[in-house]
Image (cartoon, rainbow, N blue to C red):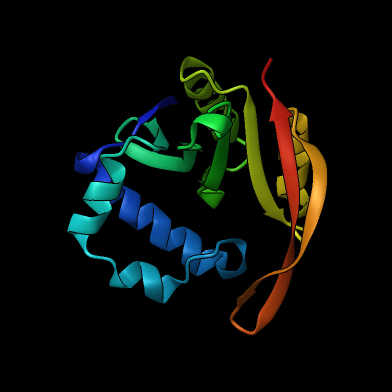
Amino acid sequence: MKARTLGADDQPVWRALRLEALELFPNAFLTTLDEARARSPDSEREMLDKGHMLGVFDGADLIASGGCRSMPMVACAHRAEIGPFYVTPARQGSGAGDVLMAAMRAQAQQDGVWQLELFVADDNPRAQAFYTRHGFVERGRLPNAALVGGVMTSDIFMVADLR
C-alpha cells in the first residue's frame, strides 16, 4: 500500500470510490449521493488538482481517500481539517486507514500545521476509536450537525496536536 496526493488524472478512480462511500454510508458524509453524481468530471478534476485529497493505492486500485485542508487565514495557518475520510469496506482493518492517516499527518507537518481537526458522527464508534488511536481527543459536540435522508445526526469535534 502506498499513499500519495491525488491529482486530476485520478478523477475516475476517486469518483468511483467516493460514490461507493456515499452509497454504502449515506449518513457518514455531508455530501449526498445525488449531489456527488451531479458534479461534473471537470469540477472534480479541478478539486483534486488543489492537492488536498490523498489516496492509498494497492497497485493500481484506490482503496482509501481523505481530505486534509489547511486553514487559509494566517491566524489559523497552524490548523488543518480532515475530511472526508474513507476506506473501502473490503480493506477496512488492513492498515489502509493507518497509511492514509500517516500521510495526512506528514503532509500537515510539512505544511507547518500542528493541529489537525475533524468532525465524526456521534453514532460511529468505530471511526471514533480509529481517530482516538491516532491521537485525536474529543473537544466538543455539535448537535443536529446534519440531516441526511431524514436522519438527524450530531457530530463530535476531535483534535490532534502534532507537536
